[in-house]
Length: 308
Ligand code: NAP
Image (tube, rainbow, N blue to C red; front, side, top):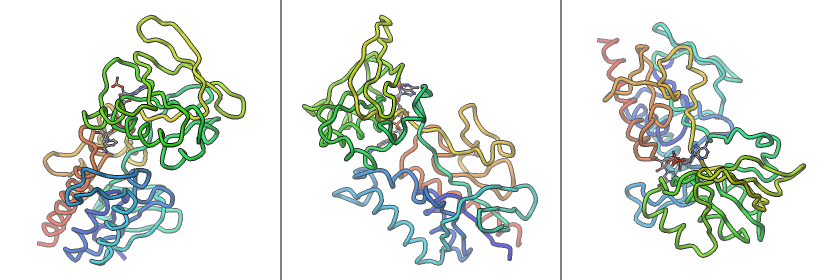
């Protein structure tokens, strides 16, 4: 069977594309991933800036609703991981752990993943003090000192969430000015449990079997000091998950899939990209959803032209 639309990825972009494609009677298959289904919002607490939810909505609840909305119109959501994409030609092949799919169009919405510090011991101590997700792991650090790295909205959100568990929370930022939005920055700055280590970077993670401390280096003076920490939460942004298509689609210098704005078309006819993997700039749930809508409409127009 050759499907009209296969969507790879299942965050706000993928599910919105699925809803639009399903309502256009294109019977989309959504390959949602086995572990990462729902995308980054599955690891978030309250989403306060998604339009329509006056009191905010929990990230996982928002994603469940998006999935069910797409399914209501006939989207076929499968929790499989794509291992290979063959995108050239009229019929594309999408290989997962379980099956090979064929489709006339593919929408790629694989999102992004956490950027790592790249320090020795970071991977070894991941799950033993090093974490990238406060909502997943915060509870393990009850009454213990916690360090959060980063100066953006993610770091502020993580720190504010973690302050309910930790004995202390120190935000380590490499500059003396935050990148975070004013409202998120103020919330962290007003929290009596949160301290800031300005102009500082983590240069070592110390501990044999679990994190015991981190070594900070002053980015101005070069001075070093150790800071006790049981939890090290790394919140320094994301990198696009474009590995599967890096040899066939055009990527920018940071690995984001290039699209022909204002459309979501890629360089290959019938292949569209949306959400964080194609957005080096905004990376919001609402912009991801908007680009998912555009990708589905682009796919619909492409199929209509083929069938004309
Ligand atoms: P971000 O805005 O790109 O910020 C990343 C932060 O990490 C920056 O402060 C950056 O420092 C720092 N950083 C980057 N690489 C580093 C390294 N190797 N070592 C030390 N520090 C490093 O990423 P984000 O905070 O994950 O946010 C991503 C997007 O999601 C943003 O658009 C944000 O608004 C959005 N977001 C929104 C919400 C919300 O509204 N509820 C929550 C989370 C995220 P510099 O400042 O020096 O570059």
